[in-house]
Every structure is written in C-alpha cells, then in structure tokens.
Image (cartoon, rainbow, N blue to C red; front, side):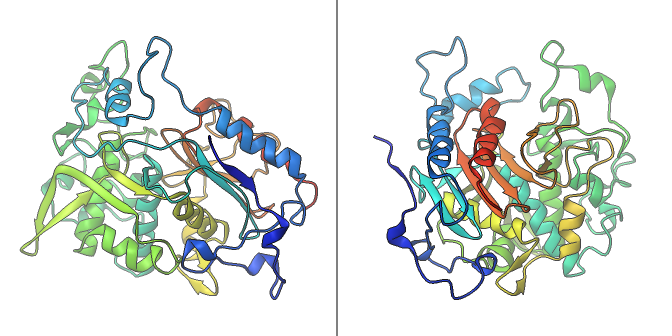
Length: 397
C-alpha cells in the first residue's frame, strides 16, 4: 500500500531563525518536518491534495490497456512511435509509483511515496541544463547571452550559414531554429506533425528567434555547446557548482546517449541530454528535485551563498516573446490569461512557475506563498488541479 504522511507535531522543533531562512542541511534524513497547521494549511485539505496526486497516477492511454505504465522502456517508445528516427539512444529506467512532497518555508509539510528513489525526470533535465549555462554566464565564460554561440564553440555544426548567428538566449528559450543532425537525430524529426511527418523537413529551418519550438535535438545542441565552453563534463559542473552547495544527495545521475561522446582536449567526454525523449537525462530523487525548487524559490541564493545570480533568475523568468508562457528552459510561467498555456491556474499567483517533465514530473514554485511542491508520475492533464488543491489548502500567508 502507498504510504504517505502529513508531517506531524512529533517533528516540531524550536524556531531559532525565521521560517523563511530555513535551508535543509546536507543529508535528507535531517530535513525538518513541520505540522501543516503550524505553517498555515488546512491539514485535511492538504491531505486531499496528496490523495489526488496518488489517485491520478499516469496510466496507459486508451487502447494501451494492459501495458505496464511503469515500464518506461515500453511506454516511451510507444509514445513517440509516430516520429521518424524515434529509436531510444539512452537508458529508459523503470519508474516507481506516485511520489512527491510539499514544502513551505523550507520545511516539509507533506510527503508521499518513495522519496529516495532515483527516477527519470525527463524535461526537468532542461532546467538543470539552463542552470549550468547560468553558471557559465555568471562566471564570465559566456560574455553575453545575446552573443552567437559560434563565437565560443568551434564545432562545425554551429558554423553553418543558418546556425552561426544563433544566440545563447535563443537556444535557452527554444527559439533557435538550430538545424542539423546531432547524435543521429535530425532536428526536423522531433515532434513532427502526426499527419505529415515530413512537414518540418519540407519547410526547412525557421529563422532564428522567429518561432518557439519544443525540440530536444536543439536542447542537446545547447548541452554540447556548454560542454565546449566548460571543457569538462556538465555533470561535474552541476555537482560542484550547484548540487553539492545545496546539499543534494550523491545518488543523482545525468546521462547522455550511447553515441553522444566527443573528444575534447584529448579526453573523451560524454555530452549529456536535456531530456528523456530518447532516454537518458537527469535521474534523481524527490528530495533533490525539491532542493532544485527551493533554489528557484530563493532566486539562486542558498543559506547566504549565491549559487546563481538574481539577474540570471530574472532572465529565466522573463517571458519569451514568441511564447510568453515560457522563460528559459524549463521555466513554465503560470499564465491563466494566455490561451493554451501549459501552466494555467487561476488560484495560483502570477509569479508562480513550474519545471516540467514528461511522466508527468513537476516542480512547482510559488514565491508569494513560499511553497515548493514536487509531484511525480501524475497525469499531465491533472497538474493544474493538483496545484489548485494546494492553493485551496492555504489558510494563511
């Protein structure tokens, strides 16, 4: 049976600092729990949000009855079978059951499922990728996000007539229109029209900056470009510059593909993927996802240390002109006023945002209410309803 709890009074501890100043120490077992009522929730309503997440676990689509929804080595290829060049290139790890946690003021107030399990997080990998690029900008390795990527990257795939003027900002916003083949995947073959898989091939490359398109080939091109900039594996950069400083576990993994290796300065390096579309990407625990959310809640600050600059988060949360529901990858902005916005929750503040991945995986961040919520393996269509239930459970700010 699924075990979950609303953190109880048995874990109540003295307030030696203001609630907003609490940052969980390294070692997830040390992360403090607080009573939901103490932190301004209706406990029954919050439990209802937890129950909703569990009851709405992702299931096979209509017509796929009998398929094991937790076997991602089957579910992912089925999902993308309509694509040309759809064969997986990286690990597709069997997933666990519903899991997540709700955090307020840094303290855990609700949790369910296996919080330690290292699962795929799909496109939340893109958030980690943009954070790593943020490190490069903050450290001056990238002088300006509006500079062409080709100025810093010698790889000939960034020096074609079409690609050489593409900027870092365009790649971060998924408006680059990068054109080419990377790791045996052509850009035109990712998420083509179901009724005409040749549509994008026939249309040719879009003008850089002119259109927003969710495209993992272009995301992986950004990961490759960042590898050239750092000249060391991005997983090492992530560990040293972000994950270790925020006290994450040592269990997370950032994968590439079986063919995504390059030789740089005489050393073989693995270029990681920015999602699990063809396998790979970030794999981590609920705890580590929540730490990522807390870093976003505090706009790059962690217990008095600047991990990423406030200006980087300001840019990340600035709406993209051609897709105002989206900032940098993978910041989905709560935009109920926009038709078709991915996150559209009237009851949640306009300042709230989410990191999203297939599965569905979600890290929801609400700075106004100082809330971070992680939910894994919920039906994507129910993400907004889950957020709304959390909002309805708030009794005081």
